Amino acid sequence: MATVGWVIGSELSALRLRARTQALSNAVLQIVSLVQALVFPYMFNPDAGNLQGKIGYYFGATTFVGFLGTWFLLPETLNRTPAELDKLYEKKVPVRKFHDTKFDEFEMEDVVGVKAA
Image (cartoon, rainbow, N blue to C red; front, side):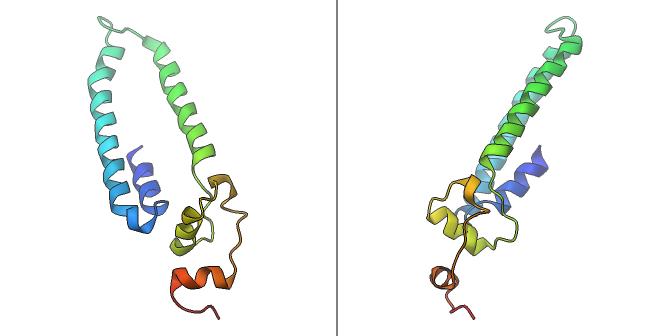
């Protein structure tokens, strides 16, 4: 979980918000890890939660929620530069349309700062 969060935070965030995004993702990761460290022993303990094999439902449900979040909320960034991603965020393009959106040389001229060849 932690390694995926670091990659997503560093690769998909806008350049000017990258440090804040990574800080926020790290804080959320630490809070979730703390809650899990406190709650999981009670879930497994025969004297407390005694979930036994039913603990798989919890992990299956959280995995499914993570899959849905990944499918619907993470954009496709294949062959995209950070400048193009910033432009897509600026134009408020929905994440499901990132791979279909095309740029011409005049749109990218103001982002990159040089004229396209």
